[in-house]
Length: 149
View: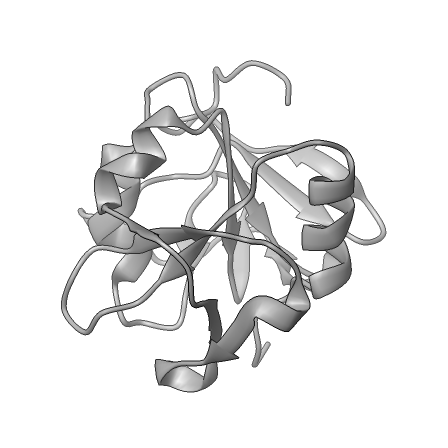
């Protein structure tokens, strides 16, 4: 564990498949805002060592329209408890997602673990996406009864 997975190739594949991809825009202490991903060349250096699009910024509530939310994680457990980097951005944002939204933690195979500590503000993931195991349904948490992505 050390860095969150995910890649430009994944974003490009989703875009090429006709999916509208919104990526997070960070502002210290705030929920995540969103911007449309338009290719790697549109990304600019941002806080926390991230790269973010420079176009129109959508408010945190834009996540409410998402069918699927891919959430980076350092680890996720079989119950859907997610370990992030500790800044709380997703904790402050995911409660805005539609109850019908499919929430997927993106992790490496070894980062899908049996159990992690859970805080009261944590929102459980319904699924994990790993390179080797593919899409894995997670426990009986907030999002466990989700529709299949």
